[in-house]
Amino acid sequence: MQLEKPVVTARLYGVVESRLESLLINMLYLDQAELGRIRNKLLTTLDEAAFTAAFAEGWEMSEEQAIELAERVFGEGD
Image: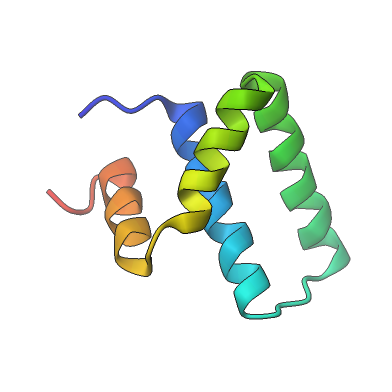
């Protein structure tokens, strides 16, 4: 399966943001900066609508769906 990497990355980013919020995790400053860098990179790669749509898809994914997506991306489910 060929995946559009920036879109998939935005989905996974949505998953991460969702989990961080639901678990009320306070990240270290350096981790917050890295997450911000990733978001900015995605916003320069994708247009706002594509980023927002992919992010929302990731945000709404169940844990099982997120794991399945990550396995497809990293080839561990073959």
